[in-house]
Picture (cartoon, rainbow, N blue to C red):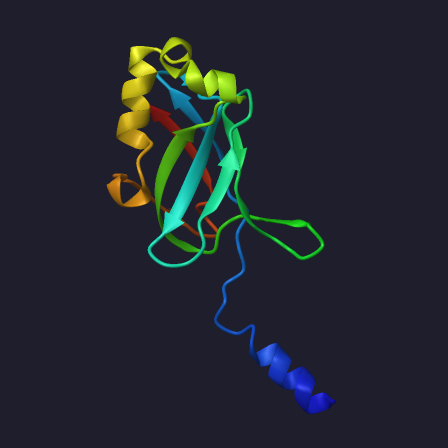
Length: 135
């Protein structure tokens, strides 16, 4: 039994624990809402969060089998991008009426897939709050 415990503990070595990552996203000084922010590493799991009504986020890394959320992102470099999150299917259909031309352009620039994103950050114990103000 002792051997199994030691072997099991050894399996966790090398997997850095996620660091809680928070922040905000603004577009031209105004909170960005109805969007999801993604932190995509070079390899591994993407962390994400839906922005609240004030443009704030708290990244989610994973969920356990008991549906408890694991917040944060492991230390490392990430490409950051956002995608518009319509409130319902009707809003998706009315996208051009809901979003201004400037917002459409914003999502085209910053809402692509991670390899297209030019926004890069590094998550560490000393750098885990990020406030983006995009134009």
